[in-house]
Length: 263
Image (tube, rainbow, N blue to C red):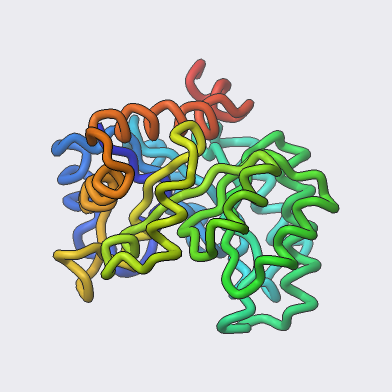
C-alpha cells in the first residue's frame, strides 16, 4: 500500500483521463490519495472527486501564487466546502513562495496568516508550500502557534527540517528525491524520523525518474517511496507502513475526517 499525500487531480492536465488515472492508481496498490485545490476554481472538482472515490480525500486553500485572490467571497466559499464535505480533511496548500513572487510578498504573508488562523478554527491540519522563504515561514508558524500540518515537497536542508519538526510538522518527500540525489536532499531523507515522514507526487508536476519530464500521476509515488527506503537503508515495507500510519494520524484523525467517516 502506497500513499500519495499531495497531488492535483482537479487540474486541467487530468481533464481528459482523470478517472482512468485515479483507477489506475487505486487498482495498483495506491491506498489513499489526497488531492489539493489551490484556488477557488478547483474547489468544486476536489469536492466531487472525494465523493466519487472512497479512498480519495481533499484539501482546499489559496496557494501563495494566488494570494491576491483571497477575499471575503473566497473565504466564504472555503468555509462552505469545509462545512458541507467532511472528506476535505486539510487546509492548503498555503504558504509563501519568494522564488517566483507571482503575488507580492507582503500580501503572501498576510494571506498565509489569515488562512492558518482559519484552518485552526476548523481544527484542520495545514499543507505548507514554502520556497525560498524558510525564515518567514517559520516565523509565521511560530507567531500563529501552528503545530499541525506538513511541509509539502520539502526543499530546504536538514537544519531547517529540524526546526519544522520541532514545531510539530511532518515533512513530505516528492519525486525530486530521484533527481540525482543531491546531498542536502539525501541528508534530509535520512534525518526525518519515520513517524514524521510522508510521500507525495505533487502530480501533475515533478514526475520521478524514470518519468521525469512527463506528466506525473499518483501511481508514480511508489518510485519516491522506493528511493526513500534505499536512502534510509531499510525495507520498503517499513517505509510504506510508517507513511500509512502518518497519513492516518495527520489527515484522517481531524474533526472533518472523523465526521466524514461516520456519514
